[in-house]
Amino acid sequence: MYAIVSCLMESPDNNTRAPCRIGDRSTSDVVVRLRMQEGRDDRVYCHSHVLMKNSKYFADRLSENWPTCQILDSRNCVDVYCQESDLDYHVSLLRLFYVSIDDLVTDLCYGVRNALGVLRVANELGCPQIISACVDYLEAVPWEESEEDEILKTIPGMGSQVERILARLQPVNEVAIVRIFLSALRFATSSPSPSMMDLKTSAQEQLEYMLTEDDDAPLLTADEEIKSEVRECVKSLLARFNNVLESLPCNPEEPIPITGKLQLFHSYLADLLWACQILSKLDIMRQFVISWMEASETITKVVENASLEVDILETKLKIIEITTKTLEAIGYGTVILPTAKRLNMVKVWLPFVRVVRPLIDSVSADAEDNLGFKMDGELWQSLEAAFVSIILALPSGDQAEILTEWLKNEHIRYPDLTEAFEVWCYRSKVAKRRLASFGTATV
Image 1 (cartoon, rainbow, N blue to C red):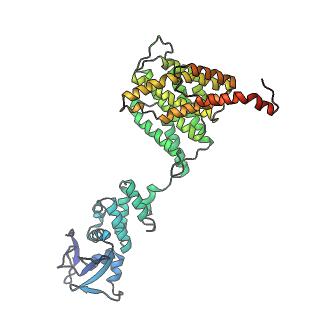
Image 2 (image 1 turned 60 degrees about the vertical axis):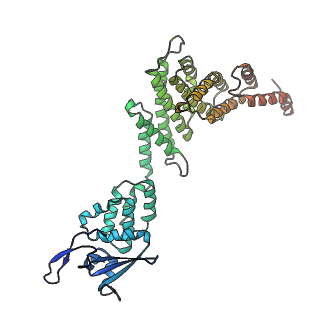
Image 3 (image 1 turned 90 degrees about the vertical axis):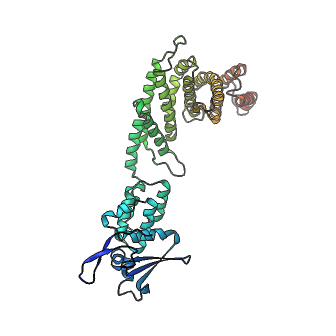
């Protein structure tokens, strides 16, 4: 049964207005026949003055200029053709004709899809007041992603009256994007109170998303000014990390407490790992790599003799993840360093990785539900590949020294330097012949 809403109908006797209601056969003078392609009809008893006031479509068909008007149940009959899926929207629209203007938006509050359906029908039948009410509603309420897609299918082509619905889906201008990026960057590289850590993590995730190329282009194309600001923010983050690092004891005889500064140290490591992602996307890793390289020996000394509690192993895991990013930048030529510094990075981190991996693997096996130790096997492979790449770029004598030590080490299985060994053997065997063929003297 259709909702009954009071309106006023003019009396032929004294020009006063008497109540009229949608679906009231005793007072109606028009039948709206909703005709569907499936052959089914639905009839709604209405009042001509209400229809003509609210809809251009009905005003045209009930005017004297319309050549023919069918008669049904001794009333004028106006046909409206619709899909069965749109039937409820047509009925809702007719019901809204009997609602006061102030209540229109309230009566639309049955959800976004309902408002879109009513808007589509109102646009077809020329109902400006209903269109305006639908626009006001849709512009104000939240949308789900599927509803956004429906809006983008429905709204374009309806005209300027409804275009403001799309305002929240329009691309933002470059100036606004840069402004919010820099604000988020400064917050993401700051040191807020523990109560704001979730907000900082969210800011970091969105910054990375803004720079990621997936199905869509990155939201932001960084120019030199933006890159400079990123460098400065990360530089400040590194400085705070180094201050904490220097405050931690390197002597094995001085145990490091689990709480306090070590927790802060771990928090900074998480921030630095995120910073690696941003710097890599912007191709500005050099400053970070140099800073990490300079701090490497201190970092390993601080943690290598620390407690084997889970918290400490999580810290070591973060260190390995950052080191992997750093060694990849060095090994694949993204950051160019002198031979001595590249050799030192191998000598510092190779022993550390050999010892830490078995510890992390053992905890991973014993704690399947511990997400902190779900280290991706691809990361271990990436770290191993970075070591091999750096070693093969060293002088052959330095390679020989590293490989000799590797073959004697109890942790020979990781990192597996077999590839480096094979290449070194080949190069060493053919070295004299190859150099001689090019007229180059051997050293």
